[in-house]
Image 1 (cartoon, rainbow, N blue to C red):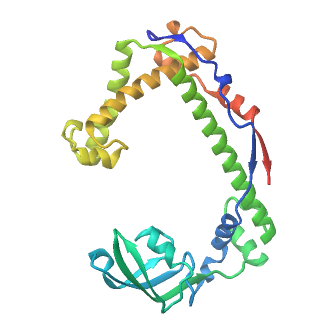
Image 2 (image 1 turned 30 degrees about the vertical axis):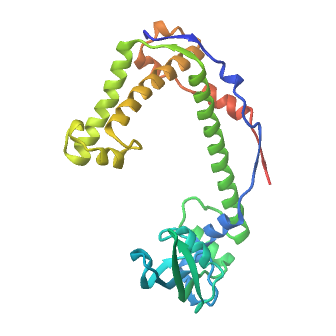
Image 3 (image 1 turned 180 degrees about the horizontal axis):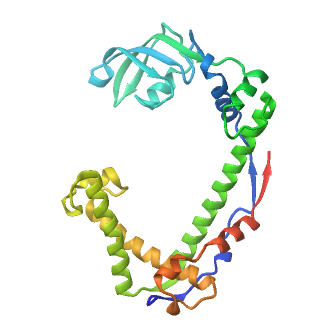
Length: 284
């Protein structure tokens, strides 16, 4: 590579949490248990609304969106109005109250409420369900299923913690080190990324990248405009080359003697191993 490092921060100087306590929320376990009994779920009328209930409400106000004789919504979903839905929790069917939206009074009438009820799972139901699931071999009781769900949750959280720490560590190194980028390598990297954008434009819109509008760019990327996206591609080009220099050096190799294709083949296990060796997970 023609780009090189002026000074490289030691990734081991990055500070991160070394002891992580994991706890599986009871509501997560209950949600997984509902997979077993959902075939036998029932719906019942309720007199007091709770989060998750399906409510029919009436709205009266000078705002068009908030002036409806009947509106059906899932309480707490946030799909209609997060703040209004939050105020529905605990309200009685037949109750009328007033909320303020955009400095405008909105009269709310709770017309009805329904709740989906899942029967309590039994060992028999768990065993039958486990027989059709690939990852539940040997599970025969509710207690075993609960422990399986908890362990699965802990495994996912451990992986999320490790990779989150790894990404933060690499960002710390790349941000605080000093790089000397070769313009030819930067241009090649940028053009490769631009080629990916061209392919996206053709596959999704049947256009060239240059023909895409800012709205189309925003719909497919996190960038609000084409100009912003192009600037980000330049930043990513530098970031990618810096990442390659980092991994080459930590493999004890001279970047000047390694080309980009060889650098891509080098693994990042040294960073992941370091993180995994230095985080202790405990289960609450």
